[in-house]
Image 1 (cartoon, rainbow, N blue to C red):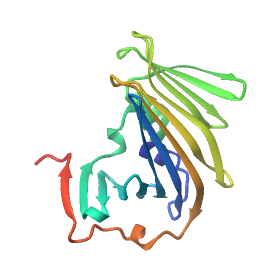
Image 2: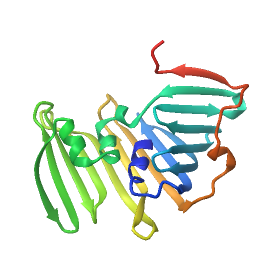
Image 3: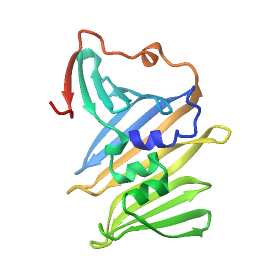
Length: 223
C-alpha cells in the first residue's frame, strides 16, 4: 500500500500534508485481515500511518527506514525498506513509467485507445513477461503483469475511484491488488476517506521520535 499511495503524490506541493482515513483488507487462503486508521503524508518527505484496528500501531517511512512502533508495548521494529525494494508492479506507480520499465528490461510494444481508456503494452522477452497499463485522463486505472510462458496473471492493480482534493490534484480512494507471485494469491483492498490537503497535522507527526524507554529491534541491516 505504501508505494501505491506515495506514487500519486509526486505532483503535490511538498509544503502540505495529505491526511485521511484508510481501511485495508488482506485476504490469503480464505483468511481476511482488516486494518484501519489514519494516514499523514508529506510528498517526498514523510509517511505516517496510525493504525487503530486491530492493534494500536504507528508506521513511519523516511528514506530507507521503516519503523513499526507499538506504543502500549513500548516496542519498535526498525527495518530497512525503500521503494526500490518493492515488487515491480508497485514501483511502476512510484517512478517514471517509461524510464523504470526500460531500466527493468521491458520493451515498448504499442499504445491504443479503447473507449475512454488508453492502453500501453510492454514486453520483457528474457523473463517472458508482458505488462499492460490502462489510464483514463492520465490517471492509472489498471495494471496487469502476466507470465506469457505460463499464460497466467502474476500481479494486477485496479484503481476504482479517484477524488479531486484540489483543482487538478487527484488521489485514489479505492485500490484493489492481486499478487499471484506466491503459492497462494493475495488480494488487498484499500479504501480512503476524508482525504484532504492541510498544513496542520498533530504535533507528534511533525516531530516524531521514539520515546527513550522504547525497546528497538533492528531488522534488515547487515551486522
